[in-house]
Image (cartoon, rainbow, N blue to C red; front, side, top):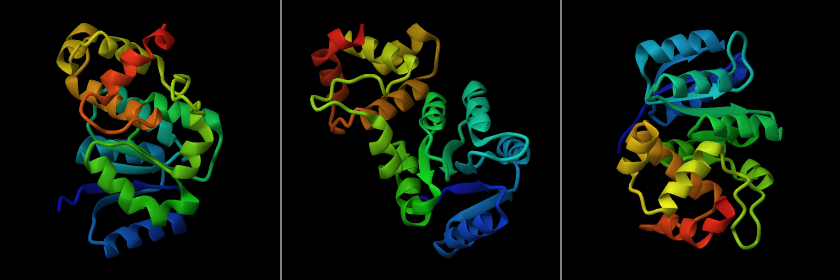
Length: 210
């Protein structure tokens, strides 16, 4: 089973140490721990860990700042945010920058292994409590308010039966970025992970995308 290289960053020493020890006991490879955002970001650039588990609020750079910079510079480290905060704006900001995981610290130890496994498979993982609170999915599943502008744009192209490669060329982005958006949309819209499920959903609800 693939065990990713992991970086952990948190400005609370006890929480940082606790998560590090927990993951080491589970035989995960912790390549670095950091107590502020800037050192975490610099370490991500240097060491290129598979996954970075970051507190949202840290000195010098927040976890969201790091996610934003990684997205902007096409850094392949997958970002998991770990936070005590439950504000919708923080959640929306995090999703905007294509983070791969969003955990509430109160459930972190019980969810972290499932989160890591999901992220390693390229599937975003959101704490169930935070996801249910902010997804606001309507009963018919057609609400697109949970999607970012980029995701809506891509969903429209999917509805036009464009492939990930064609969408990447059309928007001048990487295929990997398109696939990441696809995975995020499937999670946010609570769509079954079956072949062409996103295409079927987008065509069924095409009118709601405009």
